[in-house]
Length: 413
Ligand code: ATP
Ligand code: MG
Image (cartoon, rainbow, N blue to C red; front, side):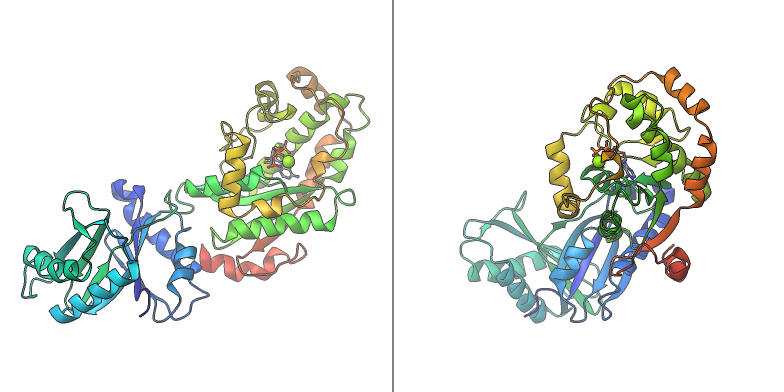
């Protein structure tokens, strides 16, 4: 027997937010639709607080793996569907229990909900009529009606009855994009992809901005960022990636005789450029993978001076996390193995032996104000930015510009 005929998806915490609920639920539904595209036989229906995913023969386990990552879904139950007929309900219940194979000593209860009042037995009566034969077949089960380890839920509807006992945790959070849009500064490292995932989980739509310094950084480093964005797009349907040529800006800092400030200047330049892209794309915040104290540029004093380069809210989802926690999360998200590939990031170039941990804002401001042609360099970086739309199942190269994908983008958003 198949493991499940249908998946029942339950919405998460946002259901509390009264008037936004219907918009949020529609967003989750749209996200689910995008994620089930590789499973053409699946059909969907929505009910208050739930989405039903009819499998029609598509593989339940693979779909659960995909759908548990949809933001806003709190839990998933694989459901067996029977006719609304006593004998069929009992026989399917036996099967569900056989598949779940609870070990001896598991505490157990049957919980019947008679949604269709035309069914001949009431809920309480059904609890007894179903649990008695089940307990006979599984003598190791112990009844506990208050807080059982396993609850066999039976929902009797007109025509069909849903039977399930498993509750698989979903990723939760807010539906994608329901809290606005932000630009994620995405390096090839471990932290920023995790920061991106955390932002998306809070309902932010994310566009990625990556700075590369060709020819000092290789094509492989750029492809790595495309691949990281693709992993993130598995949570989002599609994601825009902006690739910013950073060589000119970066090399302009090397001749000023203030090597210990190069990282500070570079980070500020990134924020300034990202802010311009944010304005162009209608994003209201920037996101980085910074974590307090991790490196010289992430001391409080550095963050203060760097953060002042943008008027936008600068979100740092990982700011208080330990590296080990971030690493764990990156494994769960699925970016870790890509992040540890050894390609150069532009920030590891021209890096001084002793970057300052305590930059002086006045000096930094003055350098930027007097650096010849600095404004024009930033303009040129923005103008030279390429945009690629990355899809979960595609194989885009950085040269596939956004126009080619415009149709997809519209379909999703
Ligand atoms: P990560 O693992 O994300 O690279 P990190 O701990 O290595 O972070 P840094 O390299 O100091 O920290 O970078 C701090 C943040 O600056 C990154 O998390 C990222 O948001 C941003 N950043 C750094 N390099 C780039 C880049 N080449 N393109 C875009 N953003 C970058
Ligand atoms: Mg880094």
